[in-house]
Length: 245
Image (cartoon, rainbow, N blue to C red):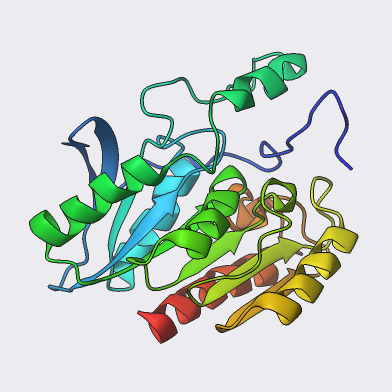
């Protein structure tokens, strides 16, 4: 398990020096980052950030990657104005911070974003991806939201929703073999429960040697041995979305 003084290792790896190709918009009570594909499309992906919030350059990089692959990508502020976690914060206060930011209480915001995507962007087929906190939120949405077509949960914290596996939509789960916060026994148990309870397509994939956050937190140029797995994770994410959207 994670070091108790640092209960979430989302800061592993480097933040990108990246400005983003999209723009910030106001959608009712929510700020959001939007990047649109170069060609007209009716397919959109909601990107759910990790504990570092909607302005993290790494997350915007992934949103832009989705747009480059033909999707309308939107990363809303699911903390709705509350401060994202900062590396300078005291990790001893993390649990109290997290109590006011539940990955299972984003339904109101998701409904607002779905309305915006349909009415303002012309989206008809909408999926969702998320990282860590956001990955857990993806699982929550795949269990209950009928308006989303598919989801990709990247190192979503299993313990948040570990007893709920009756997914409504095809879901892809990405994990790292060396993730300190998500032990492999939790991943194995998730697979068992999905096999017993899940009636839709799903896949659980563990990437060798990878730590928490590897798909969107590491810089390939300083982690050459990880580059193939980072690229594979991103490609797998896109392929899953392409298949089900």
